Amino acid sequence: MILEVCVAVVRREGRLLVRRRPRGSHLAGTWEFPGGKRRPGERGRACAERETREETGLVVRAGAEIARVRHDYPERRVLLRFFSCVAVVGRLRRSRALRWVSPRALRRMRIPEANRSLVRRLAGEAARYRTRPEIPALSGPAADR
Image (cartoon, rainbow, N blue to C red; front, side, top):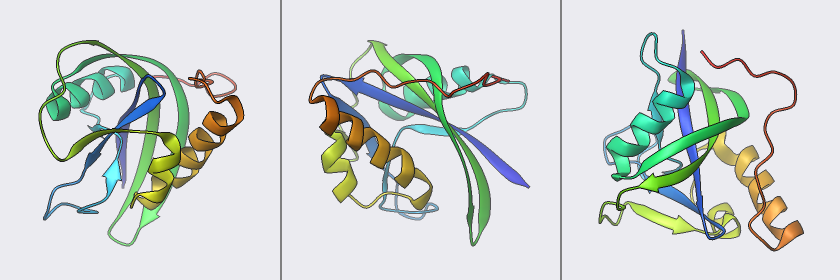
């Protein structure tokens, strides 16, 4: 069985919002983008928005799906769907487990293996443009369930 996870890539002033996974959880201590399991019947964008609100306190608007990654960990298989998101309202919860980081800094942090290709891509775009680049959507139609 594949676990579908919808992930919010939230940008602010060239930085990305990340959270540290809690002790006792799968991949504890790694830094990742906010997100979580899609509920039955829930659309991918809605899942990314809900999970971000629950984990961070921010209300975001999910836009284009920018990447899909299938990955096999020893204990589970995942399908990660990454959505470009913008903060609409709310305040980031005060927590040492939440940070705004540059894409370059994120490359040096301990991140889940399934996130590495997207993090490399984001860091490359930031280095190439030295501005706040838009994240291009997936090429071709990406169905949103």
